[in-house]
Length: 315
Image 1 (cartoon, rainbow, N blue to C red):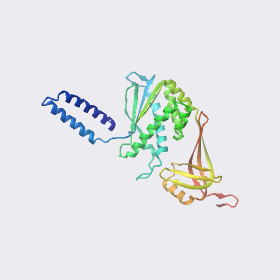
Image 2: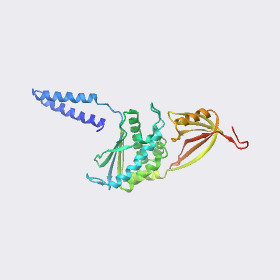
Image 3: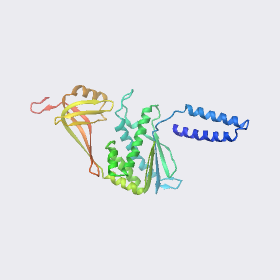
Image 4: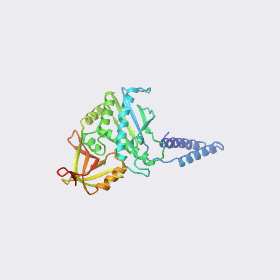
């Protein structure tokens, strides 16, 4: 049971006890008993931590995969969980992977892995919660909660309009798109409705809206290409895991640093090439939306010295 669920349960109990206590106010024995119970619950609530955010999401389904109150189709469930988990991992890694704490950078995969922790009814659903509960890192809990809320808003925007979706995707890694497409396709082909609940965000889509959402996401294309650009490295930011580069043509390029690079490698890169001319190898990703909007992102793969081919020396 989550902290928030425990608090809600205790609050309901407290209200019931207070209501009954008023009814037996004049009874010499029962009134004492209910006062003691009331005080015990108040003390439990006082020591129970107040959790501002919970790394938890609920997926509710309706339609063909759901069999009344008995359950939900196991094959449908297995298929729909994989792309959802992959969306969460991709978004978490992009949003928080670069954050440096007292223990240094941590990989996003283990932190963003979810467990199936409940089967809520109404239609029928799946409750997914943070799996990595071996530490009390409140930052990780908050970060994963923010990612789950963002995924909920992203799914909702895909069912609204091209502009809503493209705006929300501005805050999303391009690699999330393919998993979102697969997630929506499975639900659409399964002839199911969907409700997503995470934190204070909730979105619901019927089968028609899911079909529109899938077509909108499917119409969004991404193109990856490796480019080599000569210019000046203006710096790297370890905390956000980002870089800043000025090309020879005076074009400013900023973006993420490749996840495969270590912190030591990036520090060395900055020490050697900061404010010096060099050759940057960059993964350039272009996202084209159905409404014609274009978004470009950059990931720095490596930096090397510029070689003058005419004389075979570095410059």
